Length: 195
Image (tube, helix red, strand yellow):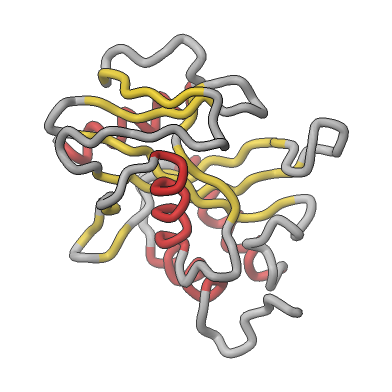
């Protein structure tokens, strides 16, 4: 079965539209945006785990702005606290849908909604990082992550999934020590955009 988007619709086309229409002022983010678009131009199946050595992924940092808190997962493969996210799947109609699906599955919270601009869910950040998708004995792949902000209903309670070692709410100003700079930047952006 091929996943190539020959009709010009579907996930691949949505990813191109999303990234082409996303404007950023930051030079590093602009370079990543262009790199992602070049990847998609070169790789018709560039959104799927099978595309090696790099593929697009989608994630969302879950926030409860009313309580000033963020939900993070202790990732079993890397051992640090991260936002919810993962690989795109053939059933995902859009990058935003993939991010929302991942956030809902990993948080256990129903009723999440993505931060949007004029009704269109919009990424807030891009992040390129190395990871072993297929196991610790396999070579590293590059994730070209498209990151969103997911708004949780006020007072939402999370339910840990099998994809996480731990799942906790943290105050914006009290992120855990095992949180890398990229996640801290994403949380800061989420806090700024939802203030």
